[in-house]
Length: 172
Image 1 (cartoon, rainbow, N blue to C red):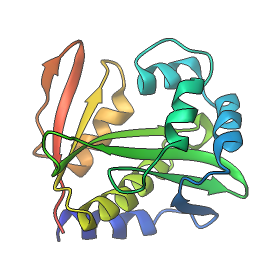
Image 2 (cartoon, one colour):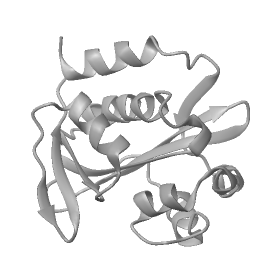
Image 3 (tube, one colour):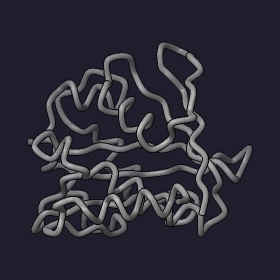
């Protein structure tokens, strides 16, 4: 079974039927800001690599400027609350690669939300000519490392600037 088929089929077996996944939209900034209320400083540190008590406003503005091709973000919604966001930014030097980042609200962690978002984002990326995600993971972010090892068992990190860097191939 190929990576994409495995990822999508496994995500469907999770009890995530109350979630909707869709592209980040122009009205999502308030939802993203409210998601800060359900994020620990630890979760924010692991996502943004800095200590911050809330999602940085510069990041909110950054997502408001998506082009939905070279820079895409998908959100997971429970009712009208944002519970996760995953994005990629295409590498301008190698347009077949993109940087991957995922953030899931603390109450929704370890429930398959990140995996669901990565699967949907990978599917979108492949359709747009991206063949690999690059991802940086800080030491101590065991859930992210476990997810990478589960989805990409062959992936091996290289260590750079205090983080583990991974090249994660996408296959149809």
